[in-house]
Length: 114
Figure 1 (cartoon, rainbow, N blue to C red):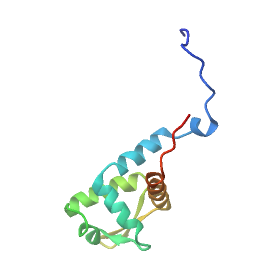
Figure 2: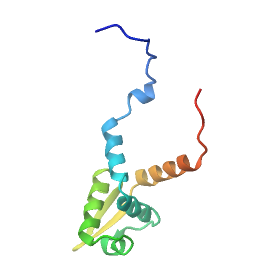
Figure 3: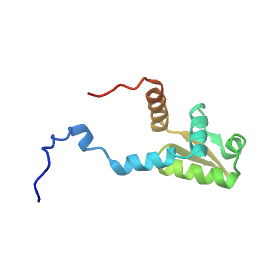
Figure 4: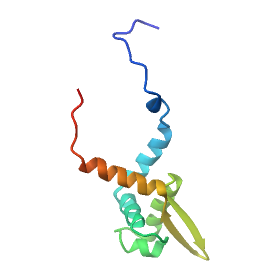
């Protein structure tokens, strides 16, 4: 290895173990306006909602809503329960925590680091 331009601090143990691929999966799932709208709606209800109820709240059709819900499910943000031919979705505790944390971060004043 070549010479370093400056010494590096030892990484903090908590940041050194951050599962980057997990964060990327969550960030991708949350980076779409329709998915974020669906997830926000699901967190407002304690009981699971049928896809047909979700379609009423977004400007896309049922196949697109189902696609977005699959991405949210794969990211661990929603669960699905089959009842006959219907699929009912619910927000996971992780989804509630992520949205609460993001909301808090966005409303807190930014602090300048030294």
